[in-house]
Image (cartoon, rainbow over all chains, first blue to last red; front, side):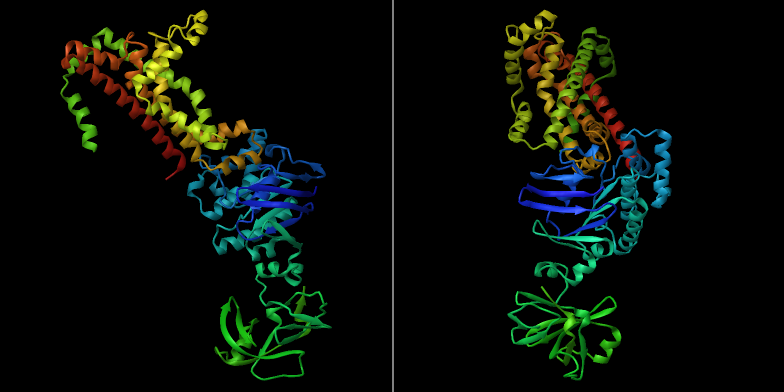
Length: 346
Length: 247
């Protein structure tokens, strides 16, 4: 039961999606990643049947469902702002879909209880949404959707409104829920970390177009182009002036690469594969340069040091031990080394 | 401002003796006209709900060309002087009008009849209902309705269980306003029907024919009935709100 979008186009006001195609496999956790305002929600709503594409078709399990109304598709959607029915209790919210689908009273209540237990909201069943915390509201919204055992669950920035701790916790729960439910999840987010943690495959969407669909590993190793690399905040992406053999030139600097071709337009140097030292080790490593520390900052447990090499700003990630050995001070001289395999070409 | 609103009502009510109120209530003509007024306004409101609420929903939820014009038309009766509205209405439902001729075989008459009074009341007061209901629907996030659709509810079920059950307070308050506005209508009603006499017309007639002393008790009764109805509905909608949405 795969989901397929074939050449979908949609224009709403100033926003547009054009000629969008993608395929999501059965029971896959698929993430649509892109900055806010590129129309990710519109795509979800077209899948759900809440919006009709101007052009193109939506296929589910091989059947064209483009004109099928949302109540007959059976896909559930969970929005960023939960959209719980404020005039109904948590229990009534969860029961809503079961009642709409004419489940018997006893079965509906039993299912609601089981799902509430799964999401840890049993004590809240008789509360109204207004008194719940953000995390509790999102759990209720998930329960209301999952109680129907939808074959496809659409998640529109489901964690964005939550604080970091709850977000991390719910992230793990979403992973487990996906495994337990065997449903296909399509998750929309602008959060790179979230996409990489949850997605089995991630589609990067920029300016109304899908630029790359790949596993998180592939994305972080071989971004398809500069915009994708920039959006993923990979750092150290440089436009090359020329490439010959395995050497690419950026301004006056020659980089030894892990296999570039003449058509290479950009190189990307992995920030964590660069080594900083106080003393020169010329000859030991193929890429070895002298630079000055411009700036440094603490990023979680690592330090991000910005080094200027002939005017080129390199971001370098180093651990605490390395950083303290470096005795780093702004303006201080430093040596930068990395192997050709740290340089990716595209 | 509040003083300006409240003072005349309080002064009028307090300066009227309970004896004169009782004798006014004992007057059959007064009782009949009060009852006629309440009934006609309630009938006008009741019928308008079935036409006005769907229109309000349409205005709140759909974007169609000419929507602003439709909204303007809905507000028009508020702006038109009510006596003029009554004259205009007369051209539609008057004795020689097409509508009257079509209605005649069913023994329906408008001019000088309760039905005509209700129509005059509806004409000038229905914007209050439509606008209140529209604002009620607009306050409901559209996504709530979308979510309900994906959960398997048909459009009709969504309308009943989400849109209507979340906005009934707004609709009820619109109905109260419309009813109250209908009761107080003078200009349009007097054109359509001087007889049977509604309470505002009776107040006017007693004032011009017999003077202030005779008009006063009827006016006070009218005010008391309206305030009571208004307070009751307010109370119902407020207490239910507290129950449902928690602290």
